[in-house]
Length: 163
Image (cartoon, rainbow, N blue to C red; front, side, top):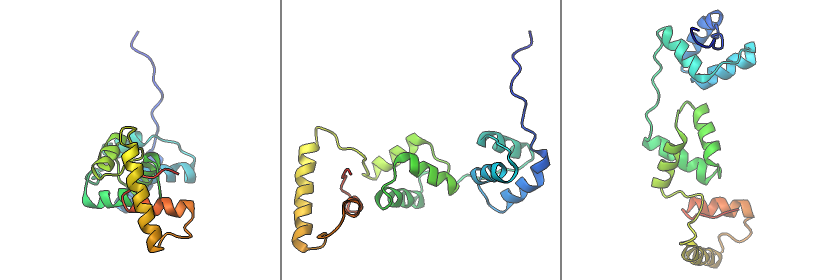
């Protein structure tokens, strides 16, 4: 027995010119994958598309991981958008930044952006947050803020608050 027959390979050759044009215009593989699915009904894996482009001689450079711009974007999505890691990864992938979940978590933690507070630090954190809230109330700045806006405001100030 020679081995198990695998899935037949996807034939992307009818779309080669279109794919190469999109790559040359700077579109990400994620965008091209979505484009093929919505415009032509062709479902193809991201890695399959990358591998086929490589066979055609296309070398698309990935953006370097852990740059100043990447950290700024992660901070913005986390603080202002209140995005989860999953949403941040999806957004970054659509923007052409390929990042692994563990890498995203490491960068976020290095920046002091935490989703949860350790139970050992809970009391200290709550006391500090109560002080900060009282200071802001005394200034009259946060009076009238809704729950969602308060959360975004304090996360922007570097405080981990839950919904």
